[in-house]
Length: 493
Image (cartoon, rainbow, N blue to C red; front, side, top):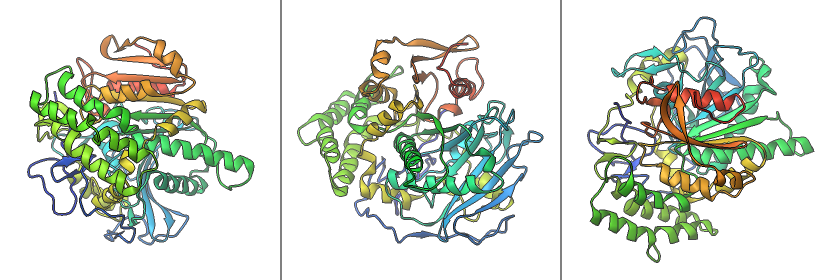
């Protein structure tokens, strides 16, 4: 069985030889670490490379620059696609890649996909997980994906914040709230364009993973608040009819999730990740007076940026980092470095001109990550926003891969169990039910009215990148996606 790629996006001169890139940067050998010199550097600017493409290289505030039907990735006949930039200002451009549904695109919902980091590209989700094509092991070719999430949904992959992936411009975002504002502005531009006005009023869904545990709840809550302001007349804009929020392997609430690192390292279904002395040391760092949990509490009691940033540094240096041992933090059945999912850098470099991308693609932008590390956004809980979204009536799914360590199911399930929502009482009364796909058991789940949770067997951090048992790659994730987007809870088949 293949397994997930090991993190190598690094800050400054830090380098981890021989490892592969992924969603959460490694700083001084620590996943999610903090550079001691990290400061919010809003004056940073990521330049365009000026590639020759099918679109203009000159940003114009409030407009789109688009390459339509490039023939890249989605080769299903008569399925429309478009890639390009939404220019928030003359110096801030967000990259998107949009694929219409293969079936019934005129009535299908609009789905937004965001990868995490913070600072990592959503092209990861497109090419490694659930897009119309999937990268092959040779890292230079792709195959059509029969389990693509655009089978029955119009799906848009967005590189955000500015500077991430193919996006470029002024790097002035350092919090999830600031990122939400830019994404809202992008969608206002996109939906106002004559080519995409037909999606105004279409059911909208946010799907995300990893740092999406922050992004998803924050974006969703912001969209809802803006919709309310539009209804009251205090804000002008296009209402975004949000119906679904789904978060996979997400960092949402550190205070409930960080004990999960100790539990997973010792009691995961496969083998201990570290020896007992390492486990004891990390547990002491977690629980002692002034330790990780106390620092997280202080951060979330109106802690300053420096308090929250130092909390991230301490907890990831002394808890998250050591407990992974020599195993891939995204797929613990493999040791470091793990070359799966295959790297997409060479492939994206080869198609850059054809799709009109104006910046050289990066898996993760270290400057964007550093901006978030400087504000301590990592350690600030997004659980209140998640509760707000659930209580608003938006259908919410939380999912997790059983083989993922870095956002493991012990921590995620502890977060879910701590929620205080209209669905929480019913959820706590439910027992886990086996989740089957065409008779193959592939996980366990709970439904509670409009809220669901599922743990997927055999899956690492990027759930849709994996297979299990007799199932194809991405098949279990596709069933999960299709069922939840159809308007009901999860069910076995």
